[in-house]
Image (cartoon, rainbow, N blue to C red; front, top):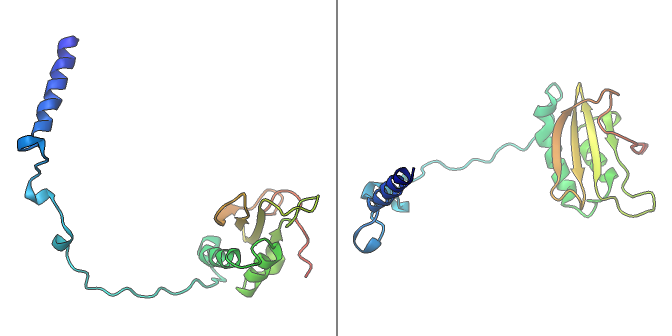
Length: 161
């Protein structure tokens, strides 16, 4: 066993010698070194992509980019801690208010909520967003509808505005 380990060690040591030149400096074949001048020049010009849009006949996945964009825009605003702002932003983007749910902005003792969730039911799936200090960056996902036919678990606030 000791002979086998020693043989492996010597083999690794000798294999390492192949990439070291005189004085122990790295010595790689010239074809292995790539410099910026060796890369092909880009001849294409970047094109602006279309902004996300509501896809009424599409799937929840088709509409996730718009849902995420609205979420990010509200998160970047002064209204980032207001569940109503997310609902209003989604309605302005064309989502159906009657298909939405949103959690409370404040705790039962009046403190700001650590996170706010909001959703839009889309057929048998849900677009769900979560924001807040406990969340970090906004999160947006598509998940299946719950067995109860809703998107969010627990008590949600009425969307009565």
